[in-house]
Structures are given as structure tokens and as C-alpha cells.
Image (tube, rainbow, N blue to C red; front, side, top):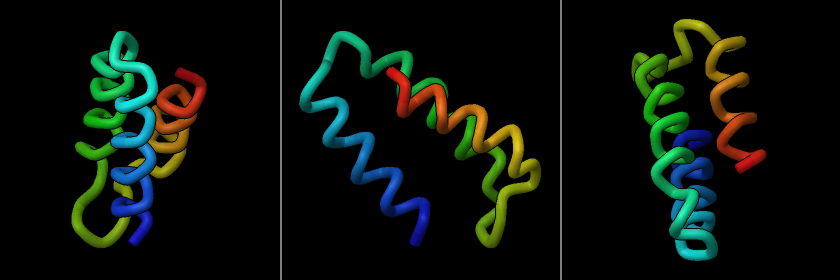
Length: 56
């Protein structure tokens, strides 16, 4: 559920600011790589990456 919410947020972010989307996508993909289907393998690192996405 959380991953779906973040995906929707990123889509909206990309529609509003296409010039910054590549960097946001990179950080989101790094956070997504830490997701094992049930939970984040390194939650602190995932939060750090997703905070960067939000700040962009």
C-alpha cells in the first residue's frame, strides 16, 4: 500500500516538474531496490532516499 502511495506521489511530482523528474526517479528507484515485497531491508536508508524525492 505504501509503495502505491509513493508511486502516485511521484507521478504527480513528474507531471508538475518534468525537469527534476530524472533525479527524483533515481532516488525512488534506490528506495525501491530496498523493498523485498514485504518490508524495506534497510528502512532508514529507504526513508533517507524518499526524503530526497520529497525535497526535490
